[in-house]
Image (cartoon, rainbow, N blue to C red; front, side):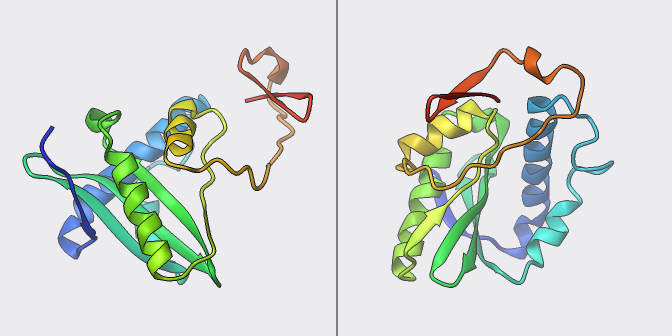
Length: 169
């Protein structure tokens, strides 16, 4: 892999950003076996994302041969930041692109004197959770629980233990 450069998002990156957003939505569809997740056009929410009032910046990972292959955004609330989203193109996962984006964003948060950065990966996205843990996201700061009203939620094979309680993911 050639060297990846992390730089600010530009209007010319719109098409690539929208495609990456679509890949993120498709991944969520796969994780939850929900073909309707994200609506009929999985890329449409990218437009709404770019107009968020709390969006403080968007950066891309640019590959010299493949163009924009990753995207990360910073949502700011007071002195705290949230990573939303971090996405790497399917063909470039596992190459350190996500870690480069997360490292860049952590440096940016420090420059802005933020007190913390949070990120909320889907609990079933083990690949993302592993990457985030390796990037230093090791403090469990909140838990969101769901009452699954679908057919046979207890049949899920993946489990997680937290405070000696077992949860399905």
